[in-house]
Every structure is written in C-alpha cells, then in structure tokens.
Length: 94
Image (cartoon, rainbow, N blue to C red; front, side, top):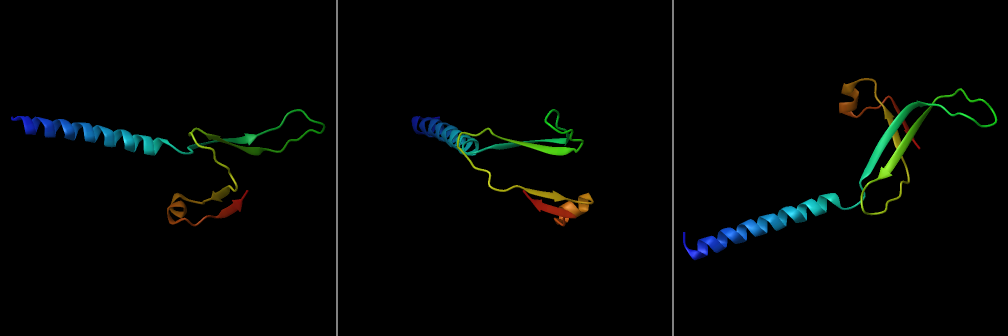
C-alpha cells in the first residue's frame, strides 16, 4: 500500500463519518411529538359529580424546535383491514 492509497482510505473514512453525523443531526433536529393516550379518564372534585368517562391525550414536544398544534383528527376502524384500506367507520376533528 502506497501513500496515496492510505490518504484516500483515510479521506473516505473521515468523509463517511462526517456524512453519518450530518444525517443523524438532520434526523434528530426539529419538532418530535410524542403522544400518550389515557382511556376511560375520570374527573374528581369540582362542584357537581361527573360520572362520564373521557379520553385524555397528552402531546409532548421532545424536539429542539417549537411547534403549534392546530387540529387533531380521530379515526375509528372496525377491522384491521379497514385500517389498511384507510376506510374509517368514524372520523372526527378536534
């Protein structure tokens, strides 16, 4: 192995590492939303007793940029095949 082959190999390793780090940074920057759902949520306290059950959605931004949620859509499917075909039984916008 001569000197030019060694330099070319070193340059290939350094450029591949730089490309990998840039790709990782590009994938991890921006808003990254995490959604947690609590079904059958109930309220306690207050003036009047409330026996209704609620769905509680908690959205957390784990990214490094700010974001604003303007709408949220809810879809209900009868079967997994309806979900694959994207044919909801019920749809709502919150």
